[in-house]
Amino acid sequence: LVDSRDLFKPLAKTTLDRIPAQYRPNDGHWTGFAGRSTVLVYNPSLVSEADLPTSLLDLADPQWAGKVSFSPTGADFQAIVAAVLALEGEEATKTWLAGIKANGKTYQGNNVVLKSVNAGEVATGIIYHYYWDRDQEESGENSSNSKLYFFGDKDPGAFVSTSGAGVLANGDHVTDAEMFVDYLTSAEGQQIIADSYALEYTLNPEVPLGREVKPFAELEPPAVGVSELDSQKVVQLMQDAGLL
Image 1 (tube, rainbow, N blue to C red):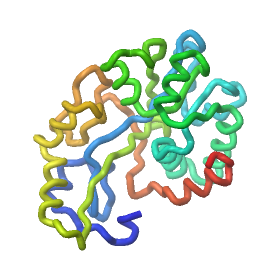
Image 2: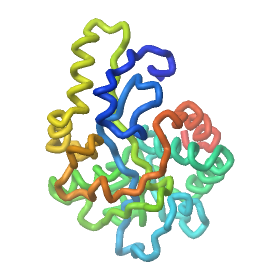
Image 3: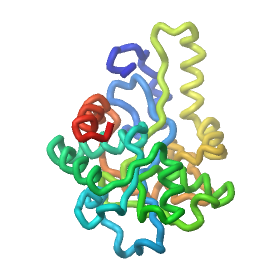
């Protein structure tokens, strides 16, 4: 929304060039610096990996009635819907939303989705990878009975959402802000992210996340750029579907 109102100052080319083009807008007004992969968390006692869908879109099929959960009010899920919209178009997105609304159990927050799957309340849940990975690093209390399933083949379910940063053109500390965003994309800044509690993927290819997380290089995200995501349209479609 800030970028659509032309409130950002364009970033320096050196800042932008460290991050793959897919994870920053075409106008160069802001940049992604960390990423979150869409995943399906599942409870192996309720569904085997062999029976999981090959596409996120399949979760709208009747066979998944009562077997999928998600948190529609959060920005996480709405970003995933934005990817479906960009890749599949409006009509297909409407159909998918209607299907998962009919099939799904909704919760307030991805951590609650994770807990519900782990407790056996529901077979699967749509979340981002780091909710499960963080719990695994801490204690495994809310993830020990579940596993992660990564969609592949550039499916909408393999979408990688970004954390981004920009500089307000009329801000009080423009120079400092530019230096900060530049630092976020630098090798040093990315290493701090890689070592942090966040467990989000670093987007500078020179600094892999490491740790016990599926390597970013092994993900197969769809070719949808951040400039293609229409958050306002997503809210409208989700409201029309009765999910908001």
